[in-house]
Length: 116
Image (cartoon, rainbow, N blue to C red; front, side):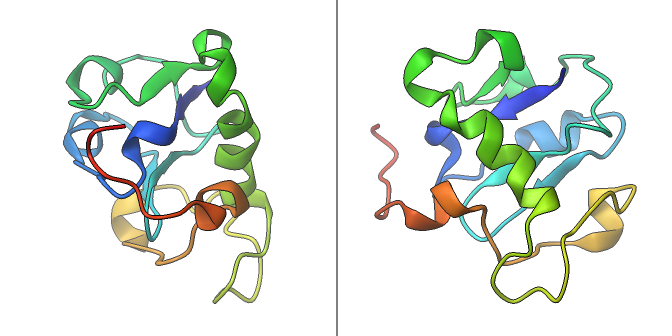
């Protein structure tokens, strides 16, 4: 199990969660942030600092946002546009930096406002 970032983060990417994460497992896509399911230690430090309430423990993701569980994992296991291979487990987001790519669900969304 891990934490998952859902729709409210899309096109917002506040990054307060990134600063709070003790294991550097929150990666930056083009339009959303993604929590690496294998690197996350389930500490929950990211959840309360998210200003748009986009972070949920995997078992607590609201029904309408359950597709984000798979999409979050796909960010690491799928070969996304602009990549030659899946991201895999790079062992820390800071050394990787922004990827500019998004998982399929996020990539397919129309632009989001901050009032969703």
